[in-house]
Image (cartoon, rainbow, N blue to C red):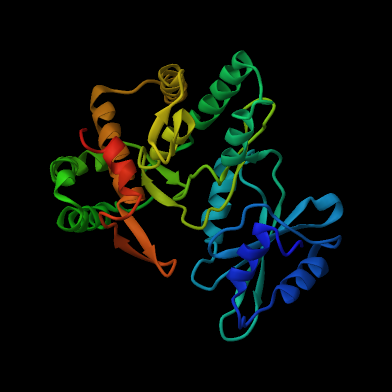
Length: 324
């Protein structure tokens, strides 16, 4: 790897100056597991080292730190529900002694992360406007096709309420009214008829993979935080399809209304219609998701702490959560 490549710095920072497991140990194990040569993926997670390897680089080998292991039951459930999107994954034990890495081998997805696809589409050499509209439509439609679960897990009502109460006590006062209202309406998400779904937990633009030529989803990666939650709590991710944040603030694409309408049309067709009560519950769930996503920051990559005024994450709450 070129020492001047920014990826080199990212990988070195992950292993640290005195690693208990070295990069060479990881690379050697990857070759022994799947063969071929080893190439680090262009995007590295905060809690893992990920490489491409195997015949024609068709396998992903990932080494995850001890407090960010994959929930293999959740991954298996995700594969059952989304067989075309979730890559097959096998666990291969631990590497290292005092702070071992958990080792996983996965199929390599086609396409690129939504973060990269979005950047490629915005280049001067990107697709013409009409093709771009069509591709974004495909992404919105694919993202809207949910697999709804019945009442398969005990309600996480108290956990969500505790987190919202903590935010109401610690976030700047401008968010107080919105937090008070969604806390009051949180029971709507646990009505017997409201759907529980497998929620990814980190459905960011880095984990959604898209065919750059069509806009269709090719896969979703990194299910470490997957759990069962009321539908709608991951809807913050939809906004990343409709627009983007930069140093000047949030910007919607010109056709974001059409894309949003298409998303909801596809969703309603998939579930057979949505009642007015469920529409209100979805609005509440969406807002809960925004606060859970952007109202907390991670300390040392693990512990969740409420965001402070100086944290850039509050820009998203200012954009989406001042009213419900």
